[in-house]
Length: 567
Image (cartoon, rainbow, N blue to C red; front, side, top):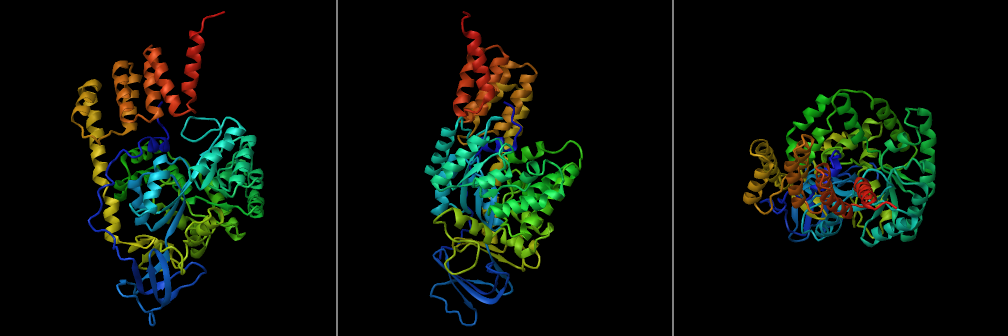
């Protein structure tokens, strides 16, 4: 199957770049007691600044906040000079899809110390990676995860229950596997949605996500969905895909009445609107230096998503979404900052974009910063029992802190480029943060070089010879990007060079034996070449890896019917 979705490719090659073991030379201090001395504290409990304070951190928690004039520091305290600087709580990105450990430092470098993965995270990320972060074996933000449940449609890795019993079992499974939330997606039908919400209530696991058009906003909220994941969801459903300002007030009233949270996700929609209106701005963004910090397959998918021509089609919707966001805030509906990264922007720094977009919509800097600090803790505290306190600077809270050179309450742009970040009491100065972010870059460059060399060799020596050369000379950890090999295979298949395309797809399946898409592409090539027995074999393998692969199911059903003797 041809890969066209950014997330499909990102997920398919997760973990393909084995560079995480390259730790930076400058590691964080191991001392368990720190003090930020003579610093201005923005606690985020209310809108205030406490000047000339000393903040003591002990064993990962904020131990004491007191006047710098009278503070008594325990022996052995590691002191961080705070004169002329500001201390704010670590930020929270409440809508991301990052699940690669080598990308986690991007969050820390931007001061993001908590993330909510909103679905499609790899099992490894949900289990082992999250546990390694908890044990501090690897540096990373605090991670919460949602289990995505959807209705029938295009094949993908999300779970699609076939009946209400299956939906309840999916919720039970998510609870058992330590997911924090259920994410309801847009193709759910009313009966399945009701079963998901009812079982989630019994299992004490909250439901977040999209608004399913078949269910509607009011019914979703009335049945207990606690968070709407995009302001865009209102537009696509309740607003009838029209920029109708008269719908804002009743939509706000419904949301407020049922006590739901909203993640406006304005940064994603702002980026979408800008690159659609001005594709050249997208080219400029891709050329910026920080793009080297993104894995090459994600950059490639961003490039594939570049609009062919300029269009202002999203401008009216974006205007309405900003007005809706301001109205929700004015009504007291709790808002959460979230980015949809990596699909919508650079993990980490895109949260700064989101906070700035909230201010652009009319929120005050304190309100916008609250959506990235205090309100996420309020949300997690309400729905995830036992979670560590974060989001404010107060005694007993987790020591998730950002050291800044200027006051973000005067200008939220001051959140960018932290001087240092503390995550659960572990201190990283700017040099340590940059070392971690830059560690995977050489590995990314190697993958790009291998992809380019492989593609050139296919064009000259041919696919079979190129594959043989790569498999003979590559290092054990070397892998080409699945999307690159997949695209080369389809180029040959479209040219009716069946033997070469089959060789490429088979090579891709050897590289990614857990990829349903790799086997689907191989099966398609065998089918086009008239080798139905091998097509059936590989479609069955693909279907075993992804029960939603409707194309595989259709082929196998047709093949079985054709092979059956007529009565």
